[in-house]
Image (tube, one colour):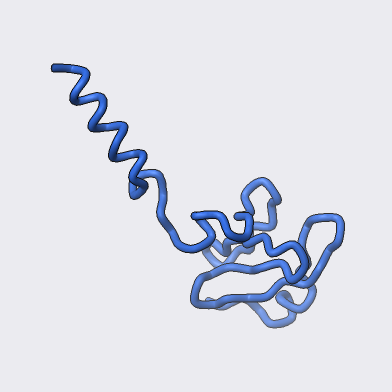
Length: 85
């Protein structure tokens, strides 16, 4: 189920500037036209919380690479194995 076009027209960034949001249906995100914050859409519900928004240019903004996929997470598990020997 896609977001209703009328809903998309009235949604705005929750920051003080309340700028319009651009919808990316493929990425399931809304991007603020002023500050560039990226808000996820989960189960057809826009998550318009500043604390959960991704900043433009952040590693998470370019793709879904959670902690398990990051090189740091793999390196830390290697360190724990080396330390237990």
